[in-house]
Length: 430
Image (cartoon, rainbow, N blue to C red):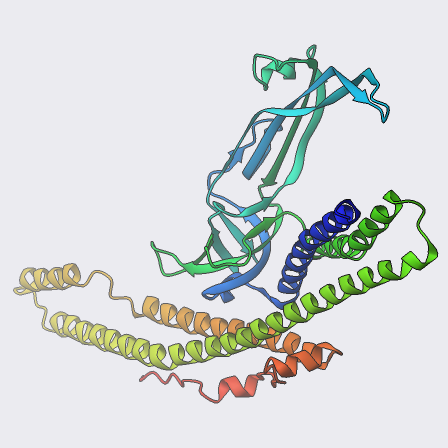
């Protein structure tokens, strides 16, 4: 009886492994769908999705293709082939000696390099730390050669592996300079300046740097979902059918248990789907709350910062006006007898205040005002994108029912009037 359930047990075990990858692929695909794409100037602390081009101050040069890039990885594989002799014993105890040819490829050398680089979009740049990321570079070199090629030993190791056929395969992937890239990762505060950066984090569900588009990455997970789903449905019932055939011819009545196996597999998929959708709805609800808090933070920053900046500018301008009045007074009192002494006083004032340029301060204030409004607009857009997707999820069937259980409710979008109600008026004295 033990042999009867051997393949059924193996099929169920492999189905459970496939279920793990099915849940993982579904989770990552939904993560891609739930995250709105941020602009570099709208990046806040937390998990973000970005699109732009790869830029760097000092580019790297890849090993094989010599491509100017920000990251590259290369590998050299060598082909081997050998004849294996083995024996087989039939049911009568007779042994037969046979041979077979085995072959394959084995990596004999590899390497690569990655440097800090920047992702650039139409709003600015953000620092990317690639260490710890899952990097999907573009293929920049792929070539199979024999020992007659100068590439064989020129870029590969000097020795050969046992049973080598004298063939080597050289491959290399890279993120070329200026190449479009897609990134999902956790943003954090930089240590050197007040700005965000993307870096590896142990609590981040994904850190991906890819030359593929978001759609291509999502479609890749979609294919995994379909393939593993098929395996989950077919493996337990298929294993049971093999067990039955081991005992003799499978009868028509034996198809009913196979159907029960498939129904049980379908139940596993349904429960896993409900579990994953509920969790993703909960994460989306929390992400909406986070997006709303980001808008509040930026509005508070504007209300707290701008009045202080205005007071600084007014004080600087008043100070400059006082100094200019003092200079004018000194000039008015100038006479031929006092010229040398007054010139010294003027020189002393100029040396004490070499940069009396209120216009520069005004320009900085204007830039700070523009940057603040830009940050608020980015936070608002991020919040609206997140809310829009969340609202769409609550309207879908049957996901809307699960959204209700997860506490995900419809939210209204922030409009311009709502942002402007707390605007700070800047009225500088003449």
